[in-house]
Length: 161
Ligand code: ZN
Image (cartoon, rainbow, N blue to C red; front, side, top):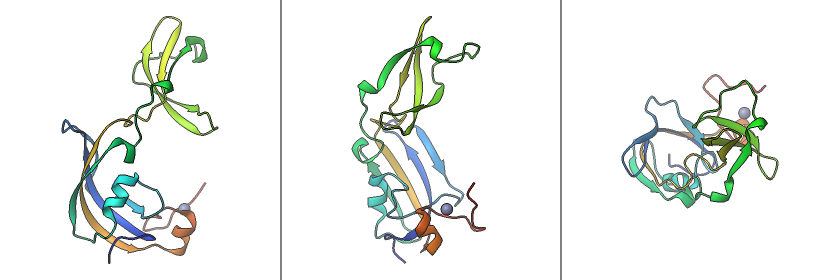
């Protein structure tokens, strides 16, 4: 069975940056996604189309087909008192914030001064070229419920809150 829209794909992968640093990996057959539903970044999804269980491939994804280019205008300095007074604020901490269109975004603290905090609203992998080593474990038809929800359900089904 080949990978195409409306198939559920289970795969193992190792994701590295161009320096060879491992950013993320899943090698126990626990990662599955619904093909054609934008569950994964477009550069990887496109490369998997037409592949089958047992195939292995290496995929290099430029930022534009991954998490986007870095946008320096998403970095801003905000007053320290916007954060809880008793909470230590340190570089690398991440917070949920409201984006310009009301969506939830994750911002990362990139600098701390006495009365201001610099936060970066770029995705942590924005501007990063991504290299995937992929092994396709299984390809199956999606269930009607999975198609309706636009995502994969586990072997025991899954429950929404
Ligand atoms: Zn669901």
